[in-house]
Amino acid sequence: MQEKGSEIRSAGGMMGMGFMHREGNSYGSYVTFSVDNFTGDVLNYGISGFTVFDSIKVSSFNFKDTSTMGTITRITNKDDSVVIQLHDNPAAVINIVTKSKSTLVFNLAEGVNATKEDNIVKITADNLTAYIASGNATSVNIAGGEVKIETNKGFTIFRASPVNMPLDGMHQRFMGEMMRNRAGAEVSVGDSDKYSIVNYSDDMNVMIRSMEKNRMRMTVNSENLSGKFLMMNIDNSSLMWNERQKVRLYLDNKPMRQVMSEQELYDIKESSFWLNMTGRNRMQAVMYIANFSERQVDIVVEDEGTPAATPEVTKTATTTPKTPGFGIVLGLSCIVAVYSLRRKV
Image 1 (cartoon, helix red, strand yellow):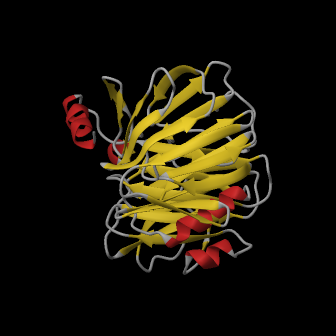
Image 2 (image 1 turned 90 degrees about the vertical axis):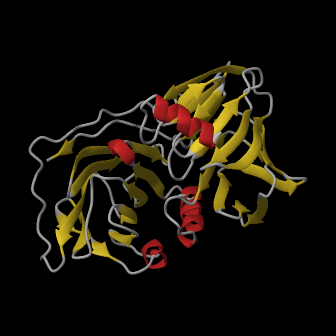
């Protein structure tokens, strides 16, 4: 499916994250799958050409329809009591939200294994590590190539360690913070200046205001004033640096403290960030914002040795409108926005 999807997307002139559809299949830059239009089951779910699940099923799912907007495909049932959202981004996020007691069954593909670690299910294969976390699970069982989760109303999240960012240790801890409602959002920026924003907390909103060759600006706000973690995956051709440059993060025009390890970040009390740069245009960062009103975050490429300075205000910022959520009020919602960014020269 990944090979066929690449051909279809190329022929259609589609670059970067986002789904195209053909003959009942969904082809993304990272994610491929099909949907059974009678049962609503997700079939042949794959990440970067590797099949992870033969199927994903939700009990008593009375299929209504499937809709797609950019990097997100949404599957709903007729009374809107279940929503399945699949995201085409490096973390291949799936979030399932239910209003009532449900059984979720993930059928593992050949070569995929699952183990239970505390309240999180770890999914492993030769070239993949991923996790499933369920906020209101009453039981989690792994047997016969299936992960079966019994849950009351609430959320279940599947998230892979980003396939373009070969780091694993930090991601299980991030899933744990998600269970404690301290994981706020995840932002992925990719080819063709397309991006995906997934909100892991229903009281958080993130917007990318502008993207330049040496600066990215976001606004982050939350109705919950307590601290939140924000994950960043940048793999594009807009924000670039060389060996004589470094990346700094600013919070409300003031330099953020940089820590040396992600473990240090998760234990910290003040606003800080951890950063990993794996190439001239590839970066992964986790930031902790200790308290909220509306905050401004700048990611700035600067020459090595340049003193930290207040970022200049972008004169013509590209503003993205607030995106719609599920339309149902639950303990967790994920909001996704995908737009083309204008690169300033």
